[in-house]
Image 1: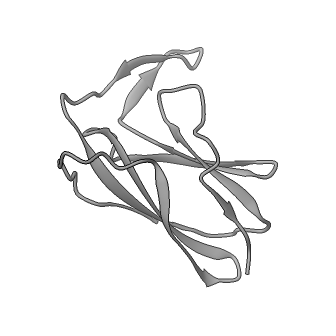
Image 2: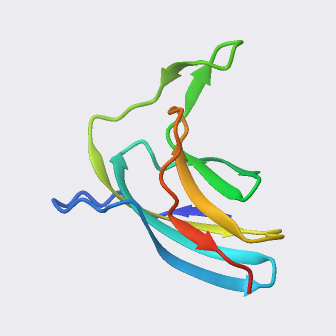
Amino acid sequence: MFESGRCNNNEQQEKLSVTAQQWVNDSTVMIGIKFYGNCCDDSYQDLTTESDTLTIHFGPNFETDSEGKVTEIEHCLCNCNFEFKYLITNIKSNYFLRMKLAAVESNSKVLADIKRE
């Protein structure tokens, strides 16, 4: 499940941070994340796991060519604060949580250590 809060366009810019981490059961976790970004960044793209890292991909719709390179990005002419909520199921081990803007190559720093209860 993914839910995006409304675009909050106040002067104080939120740093990328985890605001909530609540286990629903032994394999499902709800995570809240705040960040400041482009007004078109409110769409969920994907979630991947690799080794001990869970990466949440987010951002505007974009198109890629046959080689997977981004060719066109939806971009708004404003920035604002967002809060995203994710309900992630089937967590089988402990993970480090990262975010990745869909059209960018690099991941964020580790935002949280997701430990199963």
